[in-house]
Amino acid sequence: MHKRLLHKDQIRAIAAVSLISATLLSVGFATTVNVTAQPGSMATLQNIPATYAVSIVPGAAQRESPYHYFPPAIAVPIHSTVAWFNNDFGQPHTVTSGIPGGSDVGTMFNSGLMPATANSFFQYRFDSPGDFAYHCIIHPWRVAAVSVSEALERGVNFELTSGTGPVWNFSKDFRTLLNFEPRTVPLDSTSPLAYNITIFKDGTAPENQVFSDTFVTAGEQLPIELVRGGNETITYGPDFSTTGAYHIQGPIFSENANYTIRSEISAINGRPPDTPIADDFSLQTIA
Image 1 (tube, rainbow, N blue to C red):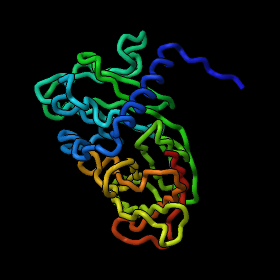
Image 2: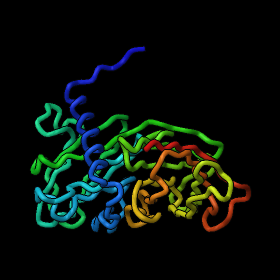
Image 3: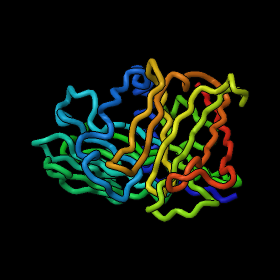
Image 4: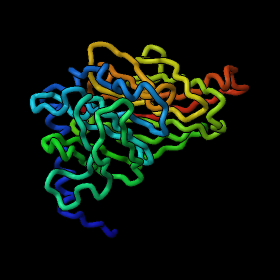
């Protein structure tokens, strides 16, 4: 089998992604996430054709700030669109692909100067798999990462794409975005869809259920992120006014386990479907 050789800048970028993840995990980031830092004040004011919101947080220009981009490392399915919002009022920033000093800086994407004004954002659609580091040209000590997976699983009623695939390795990623796209229900962006997401741990008996909730989209697919950490399981989102990713964060994602995630459409435009629309998908976690 032919193997594509990586350019030295790509190797350095992958190393930077691994270092970011390892550093965050080593300082206990996954259990100290401030949920209210995402999606950021600007992201909630508008709907844009994006999947996921990243916030450039207030005070990001200061070296002592614990964050610059939040979340600083994400794992998303291929064809996801990430939108960055400058919430650091009074300070321009950039979102520039590559690592500082690399020969490929800005060749993949580059926001240019993002003014520190309301609704300042930049978005990019990731149509290739891989690990991609990016940084702020003005503050080059700030580096973040996007990991993109082309993993895909088809059920009878849904197609599932994932930021990590069927195995979620906590040593690399402490959050992963799943996208549930119906195969038997047309998406018209006008007829609201209610999705029931149920998560079972180590079996699908009723006593193995660890999560269940309903999420509504405006007749669209459902992107939902699993986030490791926290003292209790919570949900938040969507990232924008009525669109974008939802998030499930909790201690249920804390150890080696085999999960079953059941996706079900419980209502189409406010009415239950004539026949059940549901699929089960497997997810293994490795701590």
